[in-house]
Image 1 (cartoon, rainbow, N blue to C red):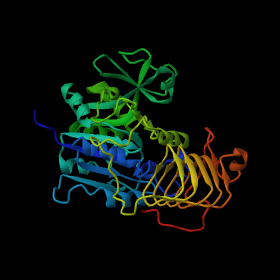
Image 2 (image 1 turned 120 degrees about the vertical axis):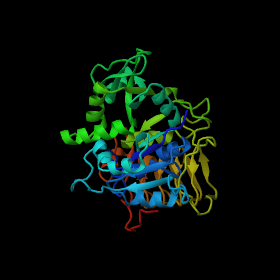
Image 3 (image 1 turned 30 degrees about the vertical axis):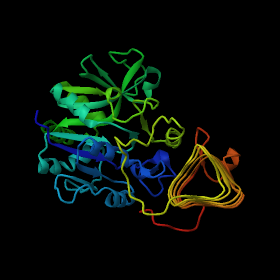
Image 4 (image 1 turned 90 degrees about the vertical axis):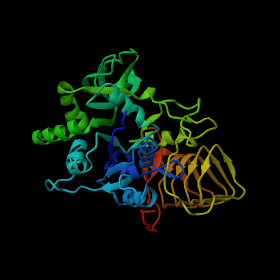
Length: 410
């Protein structure tokens, strides 16, 4: 069978208000994740690893950091016109509005679909942590002669009310979309679980263009709320079970269908904890399905007389006589003597001075934690200065405790 021509749109315009103050300078997709990545790197890596190399990234809020990251890290092939990752801000070619929703964002760039004339169009979000072989979803779509396919994550019935839920038959054809239903319909193959929409879609290109034009005429702007619920009544719309997706190199001890929406501060924190341990839920080391990112040119980390347990220390960092447990430390962090850090996420270019104590905290980039500071030990006191989440995580926003201004385009 001839391989279809595929064009991808990555929806990277998320404001990330629920992640404030971490998103004070960055959009949600450009937030750091793990020791050296950004959230957007996961969807881009999945696309490239799946052989989809024509990618437009649609940006909107606080996009400069993301634009700089793509410029430095995501040059795919300057020799082949069909291999690119290109950032597209709102063009306002059909009016003066910013993107009003996911469908409107693609509608405002419908000329790009017409320019490339693809067979299929992928529309994926940029703010989730996961590995996925999209070719398997494409095969599913083609085998069923689908007009649209929605990636669906099986979740326990008790948790499904927090999601947009898909009701599908045994063949996967969608009967109904329900937004956060009180009584979620179960999967046809498992009464204990329901299909949650992952916000990732695959369309026949001609069907998509027609549906976008009709939605625009109706004043409708969103795929999940408007376009797909109407499309299922007139076209073949299917749910693709993400749990069936098999990515090479995933270890037996990993959570096999790992997918996290890191849209809240607590979810962001706990997804980082999933990276730690000898047998992590999500193992970042997978040579068969790499997560790509920027090529940092600095030195390796230096550890002087440190005691480090179940932690990751990124390049360019220096740790003196400190105790670090269950913590991820990004690049060029300086940690002085007699510092104790437990269950934390320390973002880049942070300086933690002598005698500081940090526990269950996220420290945003470019901060200076002064000598003797205590964070995470008295949450009532922390609330007077910082944000404390429902889960009891203290969050210090980027540049919140330093007068030094740095460029966030690194």
